[in-house]
Length: 106
Image 1 (cartoon, one colour):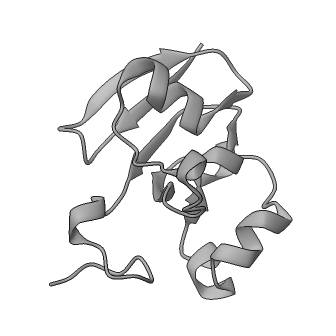
Image 2 (tube, rainbow, N blue to C red):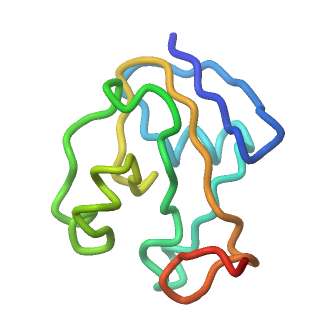
């Protein structure tokens, strides 16, 4: 089992099997990563891998369409496209604080 820490959700820590989808773990364990994929808002599960980026799989084409090369290099991923092979810590900007491009309204 691997450990997933949802930093933005008060540091909630859960266990999951290896090769789990980050978004599925979040949904199952109430981790809190926002998603509205079914509503046609692809990209809402944008998150930052704070620790353990080496424990994620390769970047998918779909992520390259929603994230810039700079964001990917900085550790951003789409939770729906990210599969885990080891421990990670993940954070995100809550939907209410995002501008249309996913940047915080601060």
